[in-house]
Figure 1: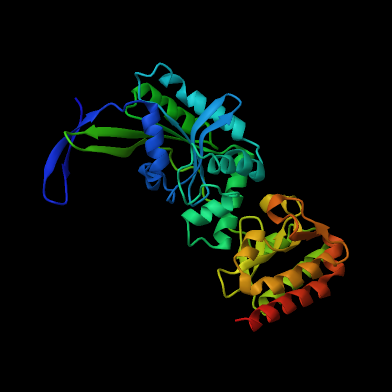
Figure 2: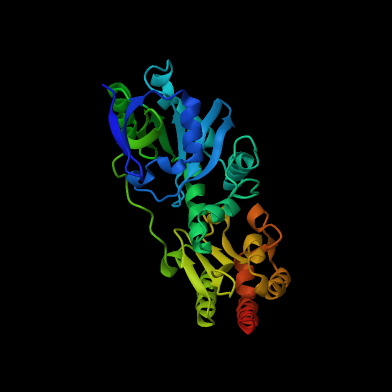
Length: 376
C-alpha cells in the first residue's frame, strides 16, 4: 500500500499527497545535489549542512553519483537507485565499495583537485553560486560554513586526509524502497568492515493534484564504531621526538609563543600556533607535528609561515606577515614546503635547524606579535 501524507499550506488549505515512484534515478540525484540537507545526516551523528564536492565523479570503474563532506569532515559516497525494480539494485553495495577503492590512498591534494575542484568548475554540474568556480576545497568550505575558524578547517583537513589514507568512507545508498535482503547485506558489511560505514536512506516522493513533496528517512545506519580521536597534548607530542635537544627547544618555543600572546590549537597529531589579528579568526603562523609525517599535509617537525588564504583575508596584518616570512626564509636550514597549501609561504625546519635557530625563532614570534599589535 502506498503511504499518504497531508500537506497544509500557510493559507489553511490542505490536501492529501500519495506516495508514487520517482521518475528515475536522475531525479533523485538532482534533488539531493540541489537540496543536500534532505540527507538526514544528523541521524548519522554527523553535523551539517553538507558540502557537495562531486557529482558523477569519474573513477576507473564508473562514476560516483554524489560525493559530499560534512562539517565534521566525514566523506560521504552516495549512490542512488529507484528501488528493487532496478536490475542492478542487488549489486549497488559492491558498486559503492568499488568506488571507495578508487578514492582510497588519494592524498588530500589529489582528492581536492580530482574531485572537488573539478566539480566546482563544471558549469553543467555545479549550480551552487556559493562554490561555483572555487579553486580550493577550503574556499568552498568557507562559503558554506561561513563562521568556520582556521582551527576547525585544520581539523576537517586532517579528518579528510585520514579517511583517504585508511579508506574509511561513509557509504550512503538512497532509494525509494529497500528489500530485506539488501538491508541484511548492509548490516553484515557494517559488522565485518570496521573502517567502513553503510547507510540506507529512503527518499520518498509524494504527489497531489497541485503539490509534490519528498521525504528523506534513515532506514539503516551502523552501530557506534570505536570512539572519536582525541586531541593530543604537549607532553604526548614532545615524547614523539627522540632528539633531546630538539625536544627542549620545541618546549621552549611553545612556552615562549604562549607567553607573548599566541594561541595554541591542539589537533589529533600536533599543534598549530595562531596569531590573533583584528580582521578575522586567529591565523596559523606555525605548525608542529611528529617526525613520522602524520601531520596535516604530511608536515613534520616545525613549519613556519602562513596559508595564502589566511594572508588574503588579513589585510591589516599583511605587511607584518610578509616581513615574518622573509625572516623565516633566511633562517639557516629552512626548507621550502612543496605541498600546494603552503607552497611559497611555508618553510620546514628539521631538528638541527630548530635547535640552532631557537633564539632567532623566539625573536621572530615576538616581533610579529608586536607589529600586528600596533595595528589593533
